[in-house]
Length: 297
Length: 297
Image (cartoon, rainbow over all chains, first blue to last red; front, side):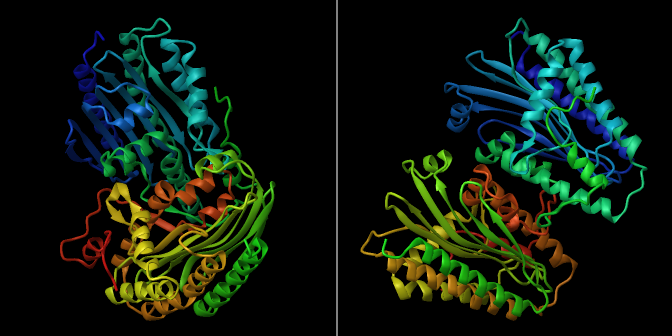
């Protein structure tokens, strides 16, 4: 561990600042509201929430927590008891327009006092309507970031995202995937500096990617049908996060700060019994794209 | 097992019919839509959904499934492999008016080919606004049903409901509780006939209880503030069902029929970041009642 954990946390805080400033500028109206919180056992975070004219509800959270490892965490991560340190930035943005996709990013670093450390994270996109040109742009952007560091990263982490962001009880993916990675450590010839450089590039890729997707879709017309569909899709987002997302369940199960964890939930979601979009509709077409293994680049 | 499992399933089907007829009459407009479904490994069900002028979205489901015990189920229930049979009625009603409570009932019977059997179930109430007279009526009605069979039932099953319907990450109960019981078998001097008689009385209590609560609250005035609060409370209902409810998670995890399981989710739910009702408001008063151990009778 040549890079100190404090320096990594510091960098994440700066990333949070840059992303918040960029999103405020892009939204043009909403301002982030910040809640500072502390964890009784050590550390805390800065939860930032925006409600704007383009982003209906968005959270950009930073946290850096430490202390004796809770037993639930050590058994879940298959680690021996000891002191841990965990820091990261987590983002979920729910746009007002159903033509603009929901986006999620997480970058994180974990370290134990016995020397174990790793990075994790990812970015994935959940369009209410899948536009192939956006999907290609999104995946190509992530591939470019990955390829700069290792040619194996994009194919591995793309498949990992397909497998992770899967709503099993619906037999559909949450969206069009992206990249997901965990436990990137000093294996396979990588140093801590290599891994951190990659995670930094992933973090910095978020703002230009979402800015592009916002700008190219925010003026597309839509009506009640599209907003209704958006709320159904948001319901699926809730289902994934509460039923399958390991991070969310883990946080709720280990007494994390509930309001920070559940900032990922949409402002409004609808559940219609057995809703089936009409044959040939744009909604049906989107459903057909919510599956694993689509190669967008 | 002096009472045949088919006879119990038959009785549950009749209960479903009576409750559906009663709810249609009470709603005055909505009619149940029925979906019959089959389980590839054996059995199936009748899912019935109503959208009416008092009930915004309600499900009254019957199922009777059987076959070789899936490994996930036998390990979760700590049972040896074998053939199982499970039947029951499950109800969740989401009313349009925030002054009318959400109600849930489940009555079920489980049997193994090695002779193991048990009943389970319960009724619990989730008011958007807690009215003490309703809470007293509700708990007194359940106590009357319980006391007829055993003086220990109500106190035990009331506490079981308090513990079960607990939204741990919010540190609040889902609603004002009710009764919850599981694995009632031929122990403590009870026969299968005794247990079945009790479950029948619980099942038959549902309609008069909810009819009374509908009639006494449906004409109470409300506005946007109350409807907004209703959607926040529905969000909590979603959180409980998807994060903590063992039945829901179990169903989703073992490839149950998703649309039948998730009929319990509300038509619409909202998530506001860190929503805190104003000091002295009716909403704040309701929150103060969402805790374990309140003695309503």
